[in-house]
Amino acid sequence: MASSGQETIIAQGVKVEGDFSSTGDVLIDGEVAGTVRTAASLRVGETARISADVTAATAVIAGEIQGNVHIQDRLELLDTSVVHGDVECRVLSVAAGATINGRVTMGGGKE
Amino acid sequence: MYCYIYDELTQHQRFAPELALIENRLTDLGIAGKIVRMALFRNVQEMVRDEIRRGTTSVIAVGNDETVHKVIDAISGTSVTLGIIPLGDGNGLAALLGVPHGLAACDVLSARIVETIDAGIVNGKRFLTIISVPNFSAELTCDGVYRVVPDEPSLLEIRNLAGDASKSERVSDPTDGRLETILRVSVKHGWLGRRSLCESVLPLQSLAIRSEIPITIKADGDEMTGTRFDIGIERGAIRVISGRGRKF
Image (tube, rainbow over all chains, first blue to last red; front, side, top):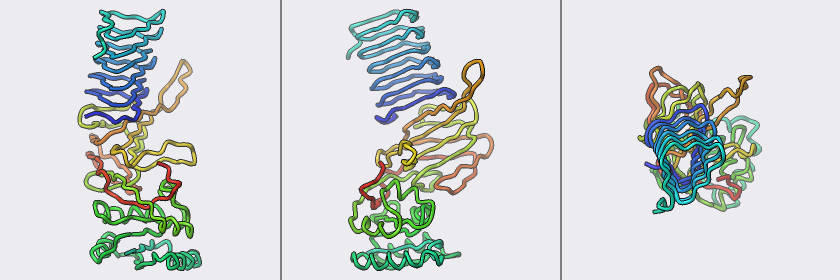
């Protein structure tokens, strides 16, 4: 069951486990394990620790993700970001200092 | 047909002059109706249900937020419309609905802008505004698919229609079919260990609270104690008269 089109915020100090799904924008600063799926934009803050496969329309990542990242359009990896997993997107922006340990596939991300 | 439910608090002498003006104004506007007075040992729910059976189409709570909470279960899920004439203190709900205090509320009732709003349900009991749980450290199952646990005891609020508009606080939308669930956790930052409140916001249709030890929650101000709370939403359960200044 998906959360609504409203913004969802998972702040620091909170752990989420399971299949998180939303149709609205999502901001994660806390810990998440399971899967993360949103039809809108995803922002992963510097303090976020995600052990999950991630799916979103667009994403800006500053924290750590252990899992595959599937973004339909634009993915922005900021200098503090760490991704351990395969990355798939249409447009990729990587800041100096960002870490990607996985295969990067571009151009085929848009469905 | 209008039925006016007078809370016990309105029977205090200090409200007598304002009530007289209100009753005159309601007569002038052509919306006067039967007056039912709450009293000790009288079951409010039964009184309201009796009036609905007799053909009342609009129940007007005369008093404060607590007055509204007392009648809400009896009118939820019916075609009866709820109105408010705020008197006394503690009228946050009327403010969110854009209903002014006292005599001015009569004109809002007369204009009759009706909104259909959701009601929350906790363990079978309806609530209109908010559930709050201080020192919450149990597990929250959200929409049946994921769990949320705070690292430290937190303040949990589950809002249907709540928020202090006067403090520029976001007001939850009671027409969206969601309960705005807010968890405020105190988190240490940096070497100095300064603490700040971090606020998670989850728009949900259903929640389950499971605790190993009994916890106390407040739903619309009423306390409930237990280890299991199942919380959901009843869409479009209440027809309510609102003013042009409503906050959602």
